[in-house]
Image (cartoon, rainbow, N blue to C red; front, top):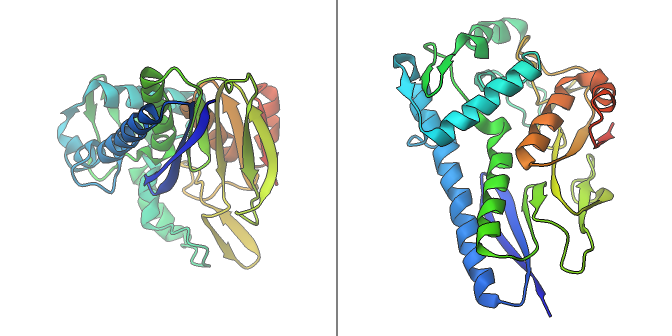
Length: 287
């Protein structure tokens, strides 16, 4: 009888888990090693916190022009496409706003002058991207934080699928994907976390294919004078989006697609639910 192996490790500042249904303990160990290695490879390559990463190299030397590798080029293509599809709401250059926004649960909200001083460094349209060559204006930065974790889930799932013809689920901090249904044909049961009590469930979902990703402000926010400031910033203004849901969970074919769509829904603010309904996106919102 197959066992449900739980393989856990930490990467990208988040708990990571791979669940594998198999009766082969040796296979489970090989999957564990390969899954963790792939997650750490992506973290090392795309983290802005690593001085040796591709992202750090781009931010350091991009103003001179760089030719990037195929994997990085594909992520840049993804970022460019979603920037276009979102009418500029999704922007991988907006991470530079972290210089004035620190979403640590405090009341330290920057003033308009501080935000305005950073805004000239935001805007994907200012970047020259002619695959595989990138020119990043001086002072600007790229930040793949809005898609790297979800991309890692898809990559790890692919690695697991190549090693094992067995049902598997890959979960990185609540963003997850599955190879298919469980061995008996039943779905994987996935919990949606409460926005007010992170260790409690707000509901349960069943997944037999594809991926789920969640975007929300349960852990990263500011609170001042009765106003809660969501950590998701509108790149056009440099300020948090107005009246977004507390949490949006989206189902899609891949985790990166689910994650980008959930983030875009949050960026729609008060119009999130209308957007998701209009686009016929399978989703769950908490306000």
